[in-house]
Image (tube, rainbow, N blue to C red; front, side, top):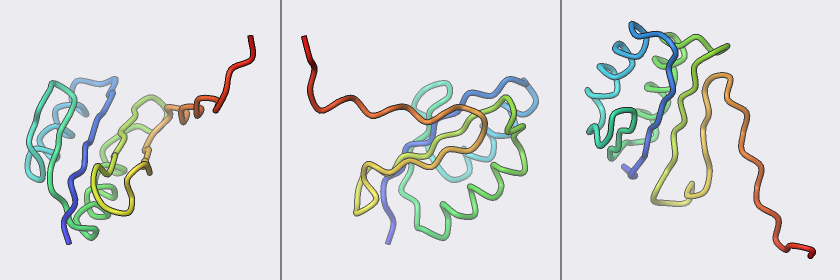
Length: 94
């Protein structure tokens, strides 16, 4: 069953960025310069992740895949060097 995914990237090298954009364009629709969205089946997401891992330099590039619908909502797949964001605290002390 397909789910809506958002894929964003920050790629340091022009060639790798172009290759990644071409790859993502075959699976999803470009909605901004470095942002794609598409309805993807689980096997397709896994295949795309493997292909992305072969294209990027994990020391300086980052690709994030966000499921927007279904049970995975709120989960994020990150490929590359960018650290995961820290969840906001549930409360603030003043």
